[in-house]
Image (cartoon, rainbow, N blue to C red):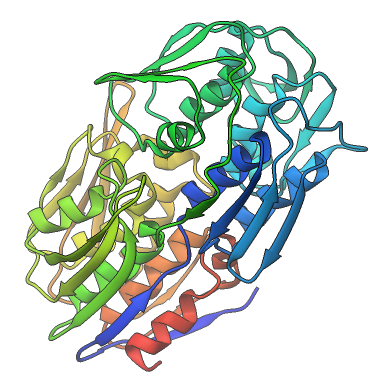
Amino acid sequence: MRSFAVKGGCSHITAALSFPGDKSIAHRAAILGALASGTTTLRNFPANEDCLSTLSIIRRLGVRVARDGTVVRIAGKGPNGLKAPDSRLLIKESGTTYRLMLGVLAGQGFDSTLAAGASLSGRPMLRVTGPLRRMGARLQGRRSAGEEYPPVTARPGRLKGFVYRMPVASAQVKSALLLAGLFADGLTTVVEKVPTRDHTERMLEQFGAATRRSRNSFSVRGKAHLVSPGTVTIPGDISSAAFFIVLGSIIPRSAIRISNIGLNPTRSGIIAVLRRMGADIRVCKRYPGAEPRGDIMVRSAALKATTVTRKEIPLLIDELPVLMVAAACARGTTVFKAAQELRVKETDRINSMLFNLSRMGVDGWTEKAGREEAVFIAGVPELRGAWVSGFGDHRTAMSMAVAGVKAQGVTVIDDIDCINKSFPGFVAALRKCCRL
């Protein structure tokens, strides 16, 4: 563990930034590249631990992968070309890799076991394994108190397409089922009450899968032959940019230009919420492609409280911790409705953020109504520097670094190494902005 001290009281920020490729898109592009015919070149591929874990897994399944900096070339094996691994597959701490690969491996003709690191081994998997079993998947995980956890073993089974109505909004579960649907007989349809990020749907269309899209559902026909589109340019990760979008909004006299950032409407909920809070965020330029992307300018603004609705939560689930920092700097009390999914991330992010913000002088609390849990953050005129904890969670640690720049005094985060999971260049980018 390596601590990190942030000196607060930054007077202004002027910076031009770009960010590594979007994690969510990178995972999906690598997996579909492995399942398609032809070579896929991925540009702006992020070198974080999670995405490198996905590359490691598809290599273990017999796929040739070459990486040169941010360029990755994947020699696709076709839908039936994956090979049985010689031992269990260790996915470390990437929940996206784990759940998406469960969908892929459920449709293979060989045995495989997906193991996980200490934190991921405690995250629930029944929400994925349950519907996969309804398709005919033969899966066996570690059962405890009515839930299922890694490791999970997949054995050959005949998958059949079905219609699944999502009980809980989850892009990972949706994606696992659609990927399994590639190996199933007939049509697999996922119906959502609340829309989640649609990177998998866009990527399946880009790779030539037989698909059908409606307002609240997406279908994929099994046994279709995927063909590489050749080159996929991955937009900058808005989840990484979110820390600097908030930073530019809360530090006085600031102007930050961010280039080539993902602007997918099912992913950019943080921009909509911050604008509602009074943030000055403008799109300067848009680029063509399957995934919306462009350049934005962020300028400082006086923020006011808002209510983040139940429908908005899935569109900014990864950005909620840093949005809580924005709420702490806003006038009034911000409410995050139906935020209970934060309890089952890399750490309990409701607990981690309320604990840390309280040490910086912010009142925060929760209220439960049935199965839903709302989080309340009362904004304060000034944050005070404090010793805070990253809780081993990359998004908590980075969010508290942003709060530390705004605070008066010095803020010390007990462990900054955990940020390598998603954004190894975070500290360098923060120093570039704030001259730390």
